[in-house]
Length: 514
Length: 89
Image (cartoon, rainbow over the protein chains, first blue to last red):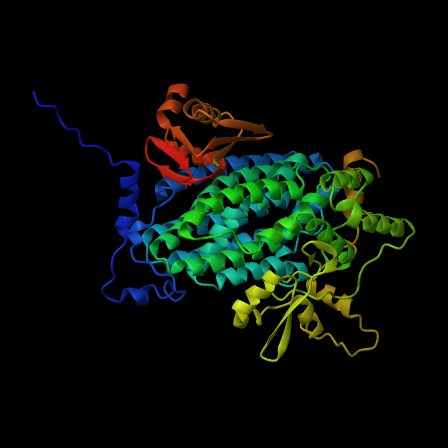
């Protein structure tokens, strides 16, 4: 008897192909180039979109099913946390300032990523890339929403979170993440993927997520930890989109290699500079500490990143230009950044403080080459001043780097006693930078970066006052007017943690003391 | 030679996945930290659906790993029966 041939169900790869690639077509009513107007102008040559290998083969039905499951699990925990006053379980109210930095500076980037991937998801003529971008766009909106929900419970009890969207568009340090993402979103779709999917979500992602999430875990913040895990599974899909896009561009045409290399150089450096805020958070804002920034950098950038670039060497890609300087910075940037925020705390809607003796000892141990020599004396001096009633708030405005928009606080690689200054001239004006790499980014795209909205420049030009403010009136206080424009609640959102409402409230709630 | 790695949340759902990886990948190193399990293997790591089903006695769809996956490293190849991470260098 003949063996009956049973009709086989489609395997995963075939199912995926039928439900994604199978839905694309060559347009006839309009030319393809008109339907997809943005995917050629960057000079990236694609000869065969069928060579795109979809990294995760998730069809929409599987996507909804597994995302729905993650949401049910996450919101159950967020609800339980809120219902049980979970915020009382954190190590110390200073920890909440890490969450303020997160909701102010990271969550808005999720929303920008949502918009950016929606645009990229419309722009590529290859269906595999479009599907992956569309799913990521929804993921990023989900992240914005879930972060907001996870942190919302803290907003009921602590200052510095209630007006995050307003601050993002105005407050000086928040122009750092804002300009990063606006640079990416105004680039073409291939640069956008190199910037966000590859450089940020693959090379540098662990340096953003692990510090915040392990910081949350060490400090009793179950809500944020649970959000973190829930988002991380989305992040692995994002990472794989990044590596696939890079491989695809490099394999399609040799002429793509130098374009991609320039983007990798640019976005590694821009991402590294953006992570200064995370480094500072990790070393200074976690009452219970885990890894230091230096340790995280060694683990996630040096060894992990090292493996990646070894793999890409066969395409002719080398390590990013700024790699050595970024590694040199691991000893310094967190301290230099905290020093800056400590100084400018009157203008920032979260609290700062001098580390305790135990914390100073931890910093000495984690940074044997730099902390005691360059930074401990500074913080001990601040503490002396504070105890003598002279807690200092800098009322001057710092020069900002035109590219990364961070105050010029970074030092020369190899010499942390010298602030690094670079400049370029373009069409009769002088522009200032914190490093060779930020300068080079400007020099490659001056028409883009001369448009930087630099908060300090804008304040000096009088663009950061509310309507009707008269700077010529007697007794006019420009800084007060700027803080009013920021809609920062003076004495509640800003200034030292010592004596703050957050400190007093938390003490009272925890101990029941009046 | 570089490691590929995969990390999962440390919970009951992920436990048989981790056990399957350790059974099927000689040379695997496992690191347990609070709430996270990370497995490193030189060059290549494979998760087999059949191994997981043998451990749990229940049907398993490999795409279920998405719910508890935290992070990974390496190039992916995926079908109904296996999920593999590898480096080419």
